[in-house]
Length: 129
Image 1 (cartoon, rainbow, N blue to C red):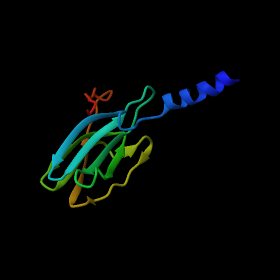
Image 2: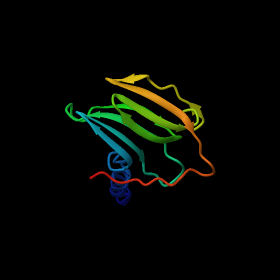
Image 3: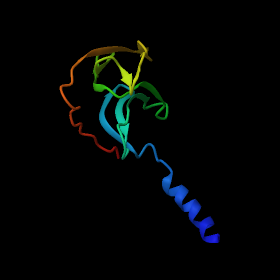
Image 4: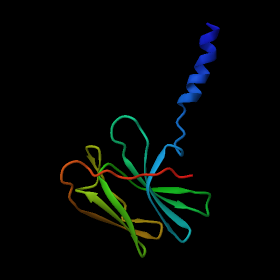
């Protein structure tokens, strides 16, 4: 019985998800005191939804979620507008999303005209150090 009591904390500590370390980044856009981060969480199983966050570099990395979606193609910044490109209507798995029109001093523009022929293209991601 003692052996089990020793192994349970070890197993639990080994399974703790270190979310910051599990992020696989697709793009980072730096502007003024803000950073737009586009990433997904590493997982072995099925598709993981993408996250787009607006982080403040001055306020200890305080973040606001712009979108959490499964059909995002690209993220770009044009002047004071964040442009989100989707394969069709924004959605997360089978649910359609309603997005904000602004976040802090940025406008959010949605482009749903991207078309995917066949399977989704392979995306190159990287770990942030």
